[in-house]
Image 1: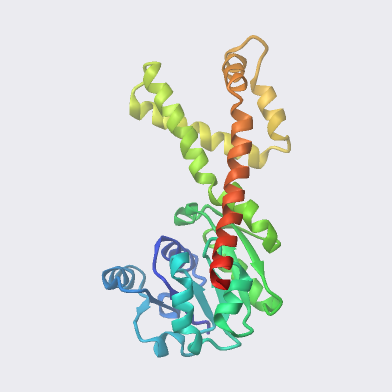
Image 2: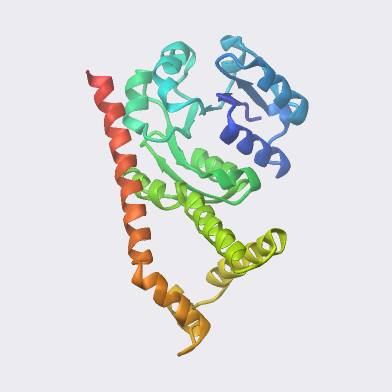
Length: 276
């Protein structure tokens, strides 16, 4: 039997709990949840998912096989200071904390523990996350298999080197916001060209879904698919010329590079603040 303890009960913790229960990887009886002080949130999760809630650390850590660190990154130092007496060498620690390295968690815990650092995105709430996973040397093959199964309940899960996590954060961690930004522009343009809001929204969503599925199922590269839609002298070519004139593709490239750089800066700031 696997007992899973969540330290933190925010939207990502809830998405993972929901995914694991809906996909029958775990039952509510297997999952224990606590947070800093929001008892109403815990009561709601208990009512919806059947999980056990408590502020008694002895209870939540007793016989726990897996511990999720799902608090706000700024609270991790205080949280680990509080819980580290309860952490045992056989407990698998899974962190979903942006900008907090495995090394930082090891130093804060002051123990040799199997640690997985995960970077899901907000689409986990609908089971469509793209999650990257990195591990330290203490994680066993069996533990890694369990972690992969857990994150596959909320979407795609792939193992990467930890130094690649900043790039994953810039690309897919922040990625949903880039798509929403594009959808916003399409909605505004639809209004200006005379389409009703609800009708336009349906067309935009279906267009995005169709394009995503083409990218997934077609063996062709994205640039090939784009060229096939772009007839010489046609409407698509006219629109793309405007995007090229405004260097939109390059702007997206710079956007992702800057998000990646910010992820690195946040991680460095956290590490440096620990050393100060």
